[in-house]
Length: 162
Image 1: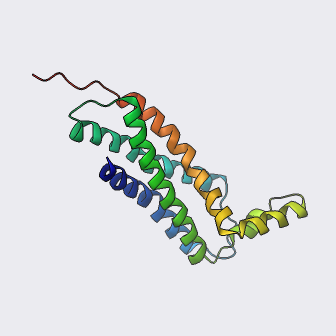
Image 2: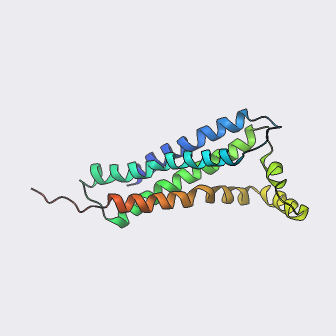
Image 3: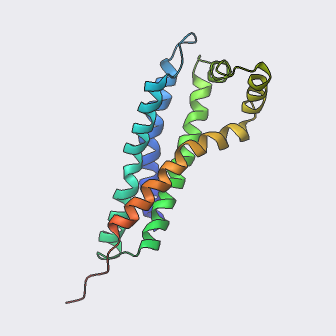
């Protein structure tokens, strides 16, 4: 199970992480920032990447378990893949922040109407642990949803020997 989780989790993490790092690398310092369409694109890329949850569960069911899988087992495999992909997504965002001239935190803080809240956001976001947790929860719930749907679709009793 671990090999499947790690393999498909890494694939999903690379699918979502590489475009993000590449995009942020080329984003100029004076860019208008991630607008609504960019946010939609990010979530679509997440869904494409998290399709590896479905593929990984199916692989585990068909190749390792011989064609049958219980919902709970499928759920565990999917959550494992989601966890690995989410960690890689978080690390890719941290790398993006380092290679980009664009100051995401300053751009985002401008969206606050209250200057005190903006300053609080900047202070909190400068803490890497907070920033990483915030980034992790961008993708993890999407992965949980994909996992639940995939586990429900792919559950199947093992075929009778014969």
